[in-house]
Length: 272
Image (cartoon, rainbow, N blue to C red):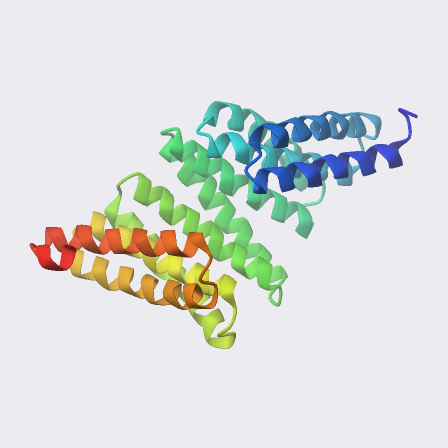
């Protein structure tokens, strides 16, 4: 029954879940096919019930997650088309319910990935403006949900991606300025929960980003110091999960960063 909205909702959710699973398994073409099918049904649901803010928010979330695929594949124009559609939906939702926490979270997710995509396309000013808006919403969410770890971590994630935008743009001064404070959240969280692998990984990423920022600023001793801190954290994670290839890859990347700095310091033996 094409008019059965409950069945359509279940089917749209199944397509979405399947698409995300396929994408996580690097089955890109299959994931895109499932996203397209889910997108068609989501649009039909919104058309059938245009006053349903829940249907609109779910459509925006699907567009955001679907857009991650072309972003990863450097198809920025395709991604931005999806993000622009999502942005219109989210802005409309925020106007209707400005204090709705779910809509704020969707808005932040969208601004993060959209701003990153703009930066990769060379629109750094657009990326910067988007991240600045995301940070403001993040701060508001953090005050609204002070005990929600995921919300607090979202603040860190937004600032981390903002830091990476400045690194990619080669802006050494702003990169050091924005990247430096990103260490605080995962460091404090790890002190409270030493076995939390998620925040440990976040801390390693923060140290590595700061190492890259210092290299841009030609502060090579600080580059090595931060890269060594990143390696120390990642080594502990690798010891707990020795078969994790991502940990090993990151350790190799951190060593490369240290070697590049050592070369600049005319320390060939250390670089080798």
